[in-house]
Image (cartoon, rainbow, N blue to C red; front, side, top):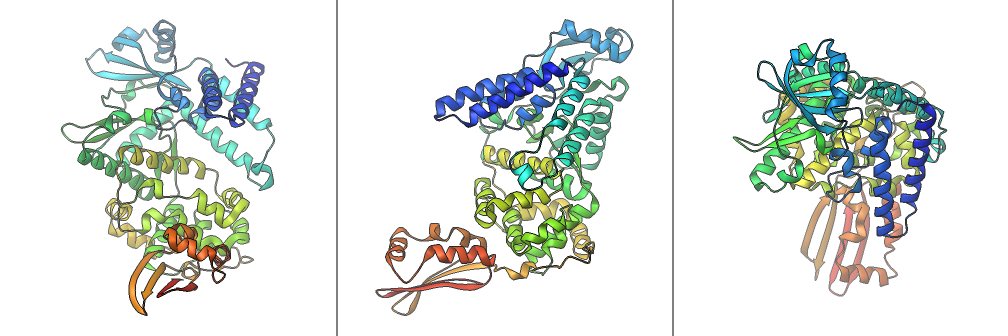
Amino acid sequence: MNNPFSRGLQMLRIGWGMRKAGQAHTDAERLLAQRALSAMFAGARGVTMKVGQLFADTDADNPFRQLLDNIEPLPLEAVLPLIEQQLGYPWQQSFSHIDEAYAAASLGQVHHATLTDGREVALKIRYPDIADAVNAELKLAGLMPGMGPVKKWGIDLDAYKNVLKRNMDQELDYLSEARRQTEYSREIQVNGLHTPEVITEYCREGLLVQSWEYGRKLDEATQWTVAERQTLGKILIRTLFHSLFKAGLVHGDPHMGNYFFRRHPAPEVVLLDYGCTIEVTETARLALLKFILALREGRDISPLQCFAAMGFDAHKLIYIQNHLPLISRILFRPFLGEKAMRMQDWKVKHPMTQLLGERRWWFRSAGPANLLLLMRAFQGLEQQLEQLQAYQAWWPLLKESVGEELLQHARDFTLPELPPELEQGPGIKAIAETLFVEVLKDGAPHVKVSLPAEAAMELASLMPEDVLEQLQNSNEVDLEAIQQRIYDSGIAAQMLFEYQHENKTYKVWLK
């Protein structure tokens, strides 16, 4: 398992498989390539399998799903000597029974067991030689050159590799995981969230023992009542908000295999596997909360200064700082409205591409390396809410999760000063807040609609088909030029167009 040459060949085969999947011409070819690639990931375990799990999501038809719950575990007879090696004595002294593996993952596998005192526990044992295999893979990763956007846009690949190494070191040390799981349980107190109890006296560097938990997987919970699913959604959102803004300790591995859901006597979420946790500094989380509050309350603030306090490279952001106010509205949109929002409507990639083009990679390269793990936590939440169809208004839940005292502390928080050679650039007041569409009929008000300003980024899609056709056939209104002006100005307050057709007048403006 730890032969660098064989691990290298394995990674090369997987690289070839990823290329073949990406070049598939039909859905059938793509599915076959993905299934083959998934099998390669599953056989690799270690870092390689971890990468494969990034492709897995909550779609039941996704071929990478086997990386979450269909990996072939080692037989019990092969594992018992490993357990005894970790304990330092025969396993029967602590356990009356150990079952065949319940689940297998990238670094270890889980067994249901019973302690001699009758308690049911989950026993996670680390694979033999996996630490050496991981180190070999990390060394191979360290030799890989920066390619594509990584090289072109100056992404600090070494920083990402260091984050990956620190994360893998943590995941390999089950004593460290036990401490972080206990800390998470103590710090993140959310009604309806359950963290398994760590049985510390049996934990070792390669052995983790915790209370055995029962529950259903996400795909089963999606069949529960609307009220139950909405409650689960609130628990998931509150958990992320509490851990991010209050505790600064975020669960960073949100794939579906790490969640159980229970419905009796009340809906409950069981959160498993604390091998990957993300620590967020107090400065970063107060800056983020201050940023959101300023956007909501209409108070001017420097986006450049906020992003810098959150760990972004201000010297890189200076080149796109005119777009930072609008980028902020796009990224934090779920926090800004008062109503529940479908997660599929939280579109980030398309408007960021429309706004920045390839320079979106420049923005991404300016972010701290651990942002990748934090983004994964939000993406996991997004997928879970979409699967449950548990659409919630984020702002009320954020207020409830952090409390007014912390909100005021964030308002009063003084952002760190920028380096003197950098200018502040435009504040968030530079962008409009509302898009207005008004229709006059025979000179009298007929229809007036107001939308969030960022809706102007999809201006054509807002128009009724007959009106859009009229505008496109008209020589008076150039929608493409108007759309480009919207992007270039960063959605600044402006009149977009006024158009007369028969007895109707159409007015569209940003304010």
